[in-house]
Image 1 (cartoon, rainbow, N blue to C red):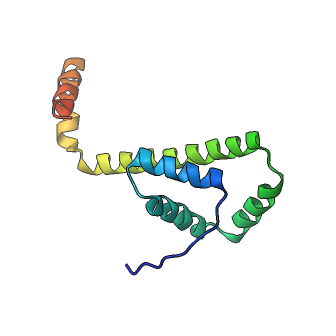
Image 2: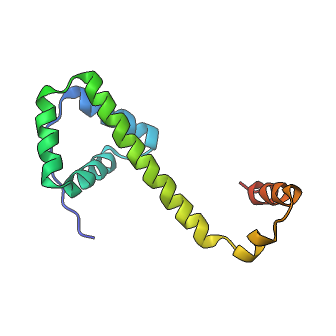
Image 3: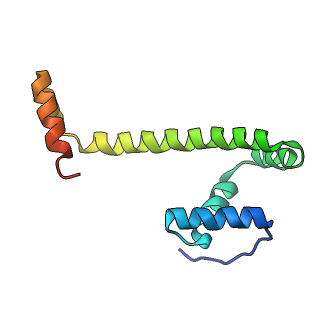
Length: 115
């Protein structure tokens, strides 16, 4: 994939938040900004209109609420994708062979032994 560098003007607080996040994630600030911009670029026009309107009127508490809702959606999709990947790798014959609670407990120990 060909990449292009762009620049953006940020307030100091936002730049510091991105810097702190990049340290927590052990990624560059460029990688953090790229992921945010990629998500933003996928948003439809009405989402951008709402965001730009909220930008001027929403309080800090309202932004926190918006952030929490977005976080819930992202985590929900992350969980669903993980479930799908796990389901693709489960041996149904083996799974159906587990009949008792002891079978299930033994299997869970075996599955998590090397984790």
